[in-house]
Structure formats: structure tokens, C-alpha cells
Length: 201
Image 1 (cartoon, helix red, strand yellow):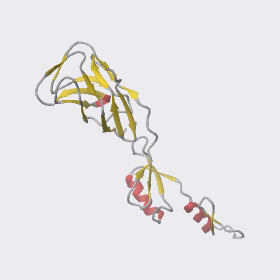
Image 2 (cartoon, rainbow, N blue to C red):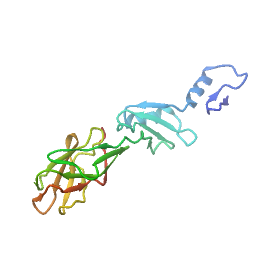
Image 3 (cartoon, rainbow, N blue to C red):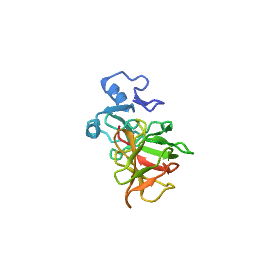
């Protein structure tokens, strides 16, 4: 047997084709193996009968992985790394209930499982009172939502103890975590300068 330029095990010159040679060729091809989940991934390692290494990494496409992170690889059979899809293009956040873009339009971008917020949400109409229950102030587009009930502590020009909370269907709620209700007048703004983990969807 010989090794080709693509690092495949192939029959050497003058060597007759045989089943063992074909099997060695197939085993030497580093392709992406589809697996349903981490259990199937572990079973694949058992079924292969060889240990991954830097010279022979194992790549899989895991069906239950987060979107954009399905391709994983290992060089030791224990530790897995993800080959993330390219970052999604930043998109705008829609304001609701009299909230809209401030001087810096509120946007989010997603890189792998990380959601990065930037810009300002501003109260552009009448004053509203915000307490512990909170009020909805915006919506994050599908595919960019952080985990439900995750919080971004925010800077603002109103007062302390405010937090932006992410709820189902990409809803953004403004809450005052302590200190009781507080009036938020028109012209008030809240920053979105934060990083959070995305949903697994």
C-alpha cells in the first residue's frame, strides 16, 4: 500500500486490487460523518476502532447541535471543537410601545452561540412607569434571540437597577430589579452594549 498526495491509503504500483486494500482506502478518507446526537457520536468512536489524532482528525455533523454549529471535530476522541458558520449580518431591533431607535440604532449580531447587542433603545413618546414586572420595549429578530430569561444590565439616563430581559418569541422587556416603580420619561434611553448566549434553535 502507498499514501496519496491527499493522504489516502491506496494500492501501490503493481499491487493487485483486493478487498482489504479497498477497506484501507475507505478508512483513510477523512470525511464528515453524520450523527444524531452526542450518544451516537460516542458510539461512532467505538465502531471506528481507531483513535483520532492531529494526523487523522474525526469530523461529524451532529443533528441536534445548534444551527450553524453542527460540524464538530476531535483529535483525541475526548475533546470536541465546533466549526462555527460565519457570523450572521447584524440586524436591527424593533421597538414597541413608544420605544424606538435612539441616536445609535439598536442592533444585534450573532457569532456562533454568542449574541452581541449594541446601540440604544429610546422612549420616543409619552412617559411610562417601569417596575419589577416590566414593560415590553422591543423585539429581537428570529435566529438572534438570547436565551429566555437572560438579562442585560444596561446603562441609561434615568436611574439605577434597570435590566433588559429577554422572553419568549424574542421579546425584550425593561424591568426595574430593585427600588420600586420609576417613571421613564420620553427621551430616556437604554444601551444594548452587552454579550449573551443565544438560544439553541
